[in-house]
Image 1 (tube, rainbow, N blue to C red):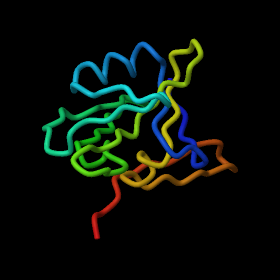
Image 2: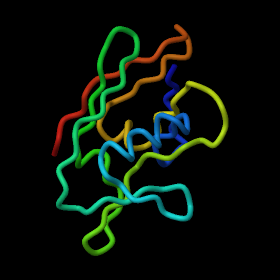
Image 3: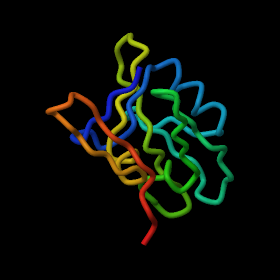
Length: 114
């Protein structure tokens, strides 16, 4: 389950998933629940599947802040039990999202890089 949330600055996921992802990329846990990885480290793509489509994030999509040689990952555990992900600004930076309230649907397309 995934929810697109324009008010969320990160990708929020279930604690188990986020911990597994951080371990997989060799990220270090920070005191505030965020994770950091060396900026020069190669990261695998992260793919969300929803509505029969795959939405992929590469290393640059996942790194949201640089501090010296370290980059903060834009993924955070929500801290409560649920299998849902909240797809915040990292998702909306990469994908154009159109909310169609009248038809109760959303449209999603990959944005073009400027």
